[in-house]
Amino acid sequence: HEVAHRRATTTTTDMTGATGCCCFTCVPTGTVQVIQQCGKFAFFAREGCHFVNPFIGQAVAGTVSTRVQSLDVSVETKTKDNVFVMIVVSTQYQVLSMDETRLYDAFYKLTDSKAQIRSYVFDVVRSTVPRIKLDDVFESKEEIAQSVKELLSKSMEGFGYQIMNTLVTDIAPDARVKQAMNEINAAQRARVAAQDRAEADKIMVVKAAEADAESKYLAGTGMARQRQAIIAGLRESVVDFQESVDGISSKDVLEMMMMTQYFDTMKEVGTQGGNSTIFVPSGPGAVAEASRDIRMGLMQGQAAQIGRGA
Image 1 (tube, rainbow, N blue to C red):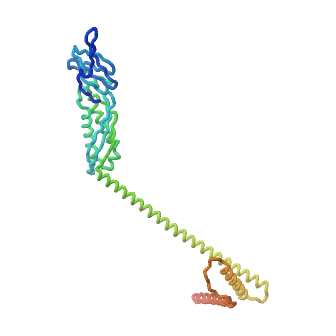
Image 2: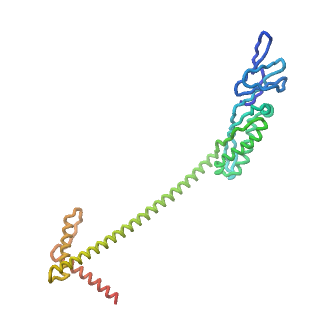
């Protein structure tokens, strides 16, 4: 679709009629043909069929495409941190075909529009990217594309071209740089994951310790309440028994209750399944021995308290 100078002999058709010889040219849609007369610009032939008179020196000098054209430019440059990258800039441009003055400039002022655009893209990219670090280049794609578009628009408008859009379509560092960047990112993510796992383990340990402390506290509270209830029950039982039976002391009542508790314990040990073997005294004197041991323990405890008080 580039502007091309082609001779009239390749684009005109001769037609011989009764009145003599005449020539015409058919212009396809999306193009404009430039007609010259004796080497001088004559007029533009737009889409359709146009009469060209070779006898007065008219000929088709070339064509101009009015379609939107695209040009991809690959630029190798280095960043601020001395990393070489390949940047691909895609430029969409079009001839200002509605203005014949601009159309004239596009055909006669500029020989190779693609080479001109490529030069401007190289200039802008190689003057912008060296001021940016590699990590920031990926975030500055829009700024780079906008800078290229602004310069191209100002420059190419004088040649009859309109810059439609510019896009930075690819930023490709060296393969070893890519691998290093991926390894850095992977290491950072691994460190964050390790910190998260350690924090989770810490929370689990702390929560387990808190739960164990709470469990022990509740177990101790329950045991204390149980003992208080047992003592209160024993007290009431002793008082009731003394009131009901005359001539019996508290000691006799406690020994009787301990015997009852002893036999109940023996019964539970024998009837509950899954119990380990336990050897306990089973004779009648076992209760008296247990009672004597308890009394001795209480008396020793009271003696120790009196000794500390003295």
